[in-house]
Length: 207
Image (cartoon, rainbow, N blue to C red; front, top):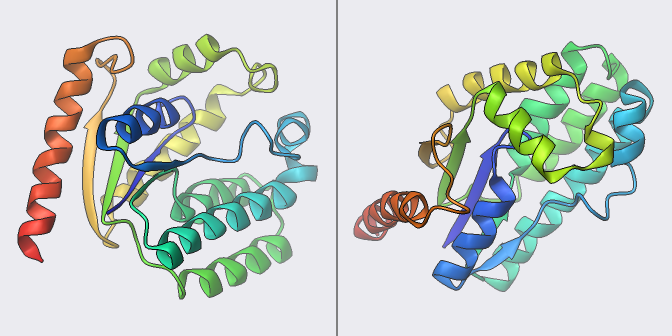
């Protein structure tokens, strides 16, 4: 079983991945954030560091998926390789933070990679509005995120809406987390698990 959790910055992906990993006894593959050599520089100068950051994330995500496939392990992935291309790289390109040359070089690499991987058995999208995202980002207090612009988050949310609306790679579960606190409220976490269990049951009944 390969599950992946997607969603905007501050939607709760990492927290949910950790809790689900513990609940199901599955490996959790986290997004390369704390040890990312480009992230702080990127938030200081997006145009200068956008290409470097996206290449780093793309390679990290591809390496994780190859490990899942080659070792045949059950795992939960914190963010997907598809988001790297269809959300973040596209947003940077449309915002003119990535030029034509770098963007199309990036897409060529992405398209070569996805020929060798399989989509998640279940993709879980955490849908969150801007106030929820901002509140979560402020709570975790990462210095490099303090200057994040509201329009940056909004643009990302718009891209997520478009991408999720056209997602056809595999099974999809959309969870609206605006009124949920699955970290501190057991019943909220139980509600998400119940919905995931229903999806998993459906997956295995198809096999």
